[in-house]
Image (cartoon, rainbow, N blue to C red):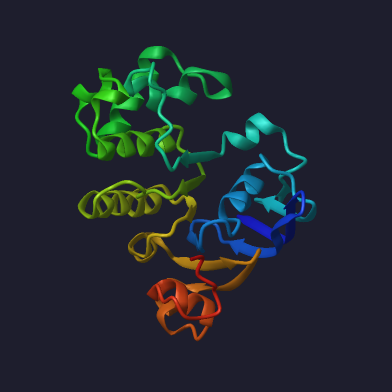
Length: 248
């Protein structure tokens, strides 16, 4: 579904991606791991066409992302943002139904609200939450609203950007379970970037280790602990000694 072939991207003298090659099969959940500043977010933005690579190609379902019709292309995606990114001035249901109230996916208001309430129910929130505002919700509830918004338009591809950031271990586990269940139910292709190894083990089919602008290792999540790759081994066990230099 998603292919990155020798993708390079620099910002001035900062070479962020230095030849990323990665394939994400249709209907599978790929989790990209790596330290801060290794290019995970730049890779994600490049797939969405928000960042244009200096070299290499990225295709989604066989189409070059730099040559597609943008509205139709972006309509295929859902996104759960790291900080929730809910609109403070909109009610919960309006946040969930944001894409259904405008643009090519526009639905009648009553229908959009009904869909929003159903998606809220899917992530474990009661209908009464629909008319509240984001500031009235806990961090965990806000993350669930963000997940409901990500799936509201039934996307083929869903991106998860650090889905458990800022959550306690119990709520992180709840969100991980929801993500896994929903991706499987929808048959969606998923791409997640995270530092949280608990999330990796809960939601990944495959894992890719990004370091120094390239993919150091990729494989099934079940093979991660016995990979034999020194970069992956150091990262997943949180060791200070190894090929990855710890910033002190």
